[in-house]
Length: 223
Ligand code: SF4
Image 1 (cartoon, rainbow, N blue to C red):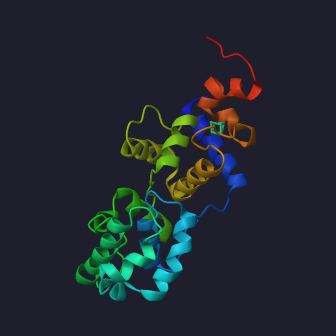
Image 2 (image 1 turned 90 degrees about the vertical axis):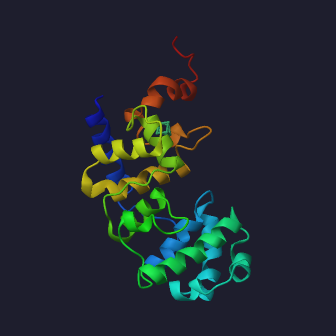
């Protein structure tokens, strides 16, 4: 199977089986999405969703959050990974939104990455979710699934994977493909032992062909 055929197969399968693919983070506007995505680094969306309602109630916009003190905000974030840094970053982020962006969340990657605690991955998520810009955020799931399936080849860094995925997915599908790969990695192609028995894209998967097929079928692996 050529790379082009592999992409076509994967796209076709996901279009049929996951036509609606969205973030699992709960949010109502760009500000809430920015807070939620910032909190989700090294943390599950489920845990973030348990935390954000209280944050959004206390700080409904960038202006109110920009006035929070560390001691005000920290208790609301305590149960999330890296609460110290995230508390500082959220307050700094809100202050910069007020100072430089009239309290509004900017809609470009170049502007977003200026905000404290916002890296390229977060900026790609925000822009692709808010207005479907063709930006591919490569997190651990996207990186792993893409490599296993063979959508990327020898990508050593998230940026290399991002560039390969952007080059091969049709532009209008990139924002969706990001969620396809994340959700597939979160629930099926999990890190330790991928659930290939439940996977719909085995026919296109390089790792299945070279390794997992033998595990699933209980066959000795060919030398
Ligand atoms: S066949 Fe297995 S390794 Fe390949 S994508 Fe599916 S779950 Fe992952």
